[in-house]
Length: 131
Image (spheres, rainbow, N blue to C red):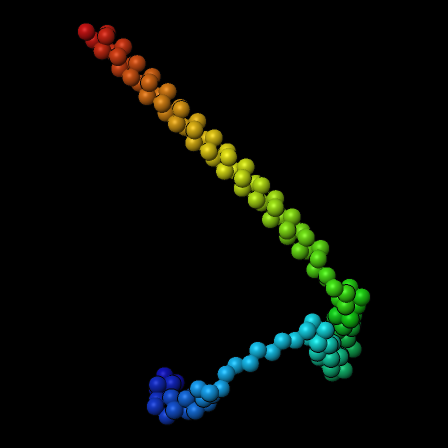
């Protein structure tokens, strides 16, 4: 297969399938309603071909796509609101953590200074005892 992929004929075939320099891509937009309608049609086609035991699950999917909540706007408003609240909570927690980190750094510095002062004091006392 590597030889086939590296072959010059395969390269020419690949180049011939690519569009020319004058052509370009076209962006196609589809509305939620049209996407939902296509999905419902696909599910209904699958419903007709499915055995009786699988039809109830397909009916449930069609109902979910065509139900009142799916048709109305803001189907995900509740989820988006929960995500926004979680982000706000995380931001306040991050600010609290930053302030605690700053406090701990100051405490480490002051404790280190106290330790050094005590070590100097001990060294002075040892020198006084030695002399």
